Image (cartoon, rainbow, N blue to C red):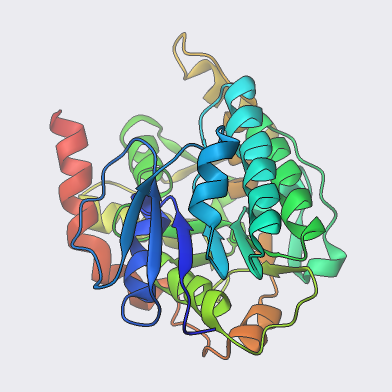
Amino acid sequence: MSGGPVLLTGASGFVGRHALQALRGRTSLRLLVHQRPLDSSLPDGSEVVAGDLGDPASLARICRGIRSIVHLAGYIGEDPRKCEQVNAHGTRLLVTAAREAGVERVIYLSNAAVYGYAVHRGVGEADAVVAPATPISRSRVAAEHAVLAARGSVLRPLFVYGEGDSRFVPAIARALRTLPFLINQGRASLSVIAVGDLARCIAALAIAENVGAEPAVFHATDGHPVTFLEIVRLVANCAGLIVPRVSLPYLVGRPLLRLARLGRRWTASDAHRLFLVSHDHFYDSSRLRAATGLPQPAPMSVQFEASAEWYRKSINEERTG
């Protein structure tokens, strides 16, 4: 499949910018841009096209001549209507256009948060039950259904870190500046993956000849569960912050954190993110490594330093701004 081309949606986003680099030089590319401009040099032979996930005519035109689609575009806000419109309905329209254009493979980036309020310790894809608890997760599940019905592939990372991250490490830094306690002593073991490693997995699935035509779900992790306390220490050291010495049980800390919103609306996503980092959530990703042929990545304790300076600058700019 190296002859491509590959259609990449969301190329200007956090994961999309890294996926673009991982695909550079390996296949010809068509990049779907909606609102946010691309901020990096484009690979030779790439084509930038304007389109809208809500516009079937533009999607039909964009999918013409494509062999595989890497679908990374999506809405990650709190508006249920936009979640449904962009993530669910938009993906259904894209998959329909792909089918009609004869696209061979669709790869969709979802998230392990679709499992809802469950504790997981090393489970595989077949053993984790989808039970979405937030509007964004419900819309992602609907998108997954469309992709899997078209015999596509779905990747489910949990937490992704690295240059360009605006939601995981920065949120921990904000909490360290304002909250004087941890939950459950930070003992929860979590699955993470560096964005570069995730991008390499995406690229491998997009261009590999030996990935089967059956619909597939893959956990995307680095294979090294890390405790929330270990992550907090990395972030605190990077940003010059203090690791809290006080710990509260989850059932005590949860209402306190809700009050700490200081008038801002406590959303279903807020509640779910707190649950995720307070309880074990780590997954077996051996199936993805087998499908891609990629080696197991290094753990966060080793890789975090590569993006520490970027995080330091980003966190300091947010604090002073």
